[in-house]
Length: 494
Ligand code: AHR
Image (cartoon, rainbow, N blue to C red; front, side, top):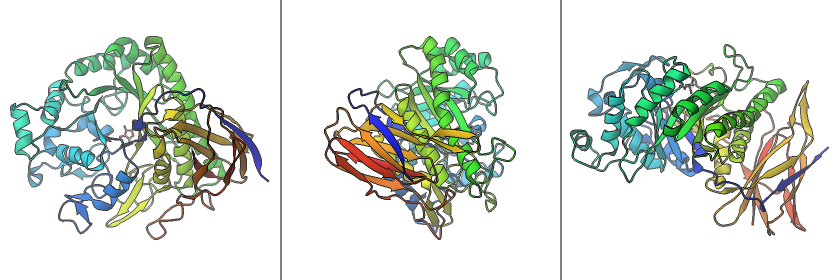
C-alpha cells in the first residue's frame, strides 16, 4: 500500500544560494585513497593522464567536484610540504604515523594542485599546525601562490610550474582537539590567531581561512573559538561521522546489515540537521549576520574496514544505504545554505564513504557517487524552502520522517526537487505543491535497488545506478510522484 505525502516547495520564499562547495570532497594521504586511487604514475599500465588515472579523472569531472581538501585529516598535522616537491625519485619516504604504511611522497604539492586544475576543482589545503610552524605554512603558501621572483617562487618554477596556482582555502590544523595536537579550545584559539596572521594571500586572490572546529556536538569548542578568534575566522569546521552501530570498536559492516542498522544509519544522517542548527546558534551569538561560514569538512558513514582491504586502510564498500544517507545529508546542508558554505565528504576514492572504488586497472562508481551526480544540478542554485508532511517510518521503537526533501531553482529557472523515501517497504505517493512556480513539464531520475544493502562491484557495476523516472505527472499545478520504497528521486520542473 502506498502512503500519501504532501510536499510544498516555496518558490515564493527563495532562500540563500546553495554554495557549490557543499558538494566538496576530502582526499587524504592514506590507504589507496591517493596512491592507486588517483595517482598511478606516468609509467603505469593503468591508462593515465600525466600519472592521474584517466577513468577516475573523467568520473570526477562528470560530477563537477567543486573543491578538494588535502592532504588530511590527521595526516596533515605531521606533513612536511618540502617532502613532496622536486624530482619524485629523490623524495624522502616517511612512515604514515596516522594510518600505517609508508608514503614515498610521489604525490605532493604539484601533483595535488595540478590534479585540482585537471578536474576543475578549487583547492583546500589542510595546514600542519600540530607539528609544524607558522613559517613553514607561510613559505608553503608563498611557494604555491607567489607571482614574484622570490626564491620560493623560483623554486616552484624550477620544479616545473611557472604560473602561480590559485589556493582557495586553508584549514588551520585538523581536529586540534584530537589527532592534531590534543589542544584545549582556549589554547587553540590563540594558536589559530597566530597562524591566521601569517596567511598572506596575493591581493587579487584571497584565501579563505578555516578554523579547526568541533567534533560532533562539542558546542563549547565552537563557542570558545568564535569568542576568542571569531574576527579572524572566515569559516569554522565541523566533523561528524555516522557509525552504524554507534560503537567505534565494532562499527558494523558496510554490506552485511539488517533493517536495524539501516535505520540507525539514516537516523545518524538526519542528526546533521540538529548539529548544524546548534553550532550555528552558538555562532549567531558572535556573528548574527552570518559572515563566518560553517564548513562540514569531514562527514559520512564509517563502517568496519572491508575484510578484503589488505593494506587499503579504511577501505569500505558502499551500498544503497550510503546513497540515502548522502542524499539526506546534502538536503540538510542545502536547508542551512545561509551558514554552510562548504562540506567535504570523507573520502573521495577507496576510503570510507567513497565516490569511487578501484582495484588495479578496474574502477567502479558507488551508489554515493550517483547521488552526487543526480544532485549536481543544485550547485549554485537558489534554495527553496520545503515543507514535508509525511507519515513516520518506524522500525522497532525508532521512528523518523518517512520522506526527506530539498529544492532549488537554477540559473536557467528550472526547479529541481529531490525526494528521499527512507522506508524500505512502502512506496509513497507524493503530492508536490508548487506555489509561485509556473511549470508544465516534469522529468526525473530515480536511484534504488531491490535490497537495502545492494552494492556495485567490479563484476556487477550497475546494480545501483540512476534510471529515468517515469513516475511523475504534472496536473493542474500539482506534481504527483510515486516514490519506490528506499529510493532517491530528483525531479526537474520546467
Ligand atoms: O577521515 C579519516 C579521519 O577521520 C581523518 O583523518 C580525521 O580528521 C578524522 O578523525
